[in-house]
Image (cartoon, rainbow, N blue to C red; front, side, top):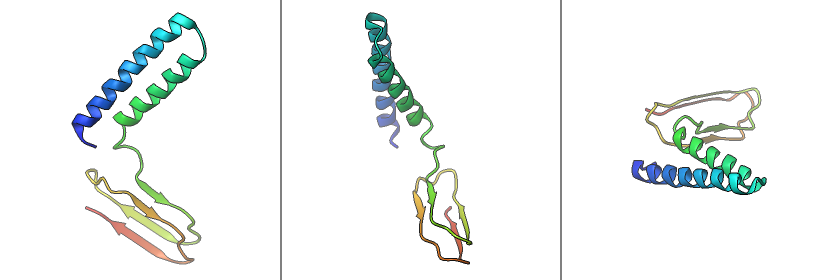
Length: 93
């Protein structure tokens, strides 16, 4: 993700987080807590987006699937419906 865009999104979410805390102290209802949790999750996802898995493997039965990627690889790899006794090897550098 573009660093400038990421910084703007984190800033907007942080402002919303502060407003949610202020709202909670003013009203003591459940809605501000929901907003607080949502904004916290958004900020954490934006900060750790590179660490989240971008490889999806599903519907594999009795097969080998090996995926190797580098740290700088931003690609999304999706492997589905592998037949029995298959050997799938994906390397990206």
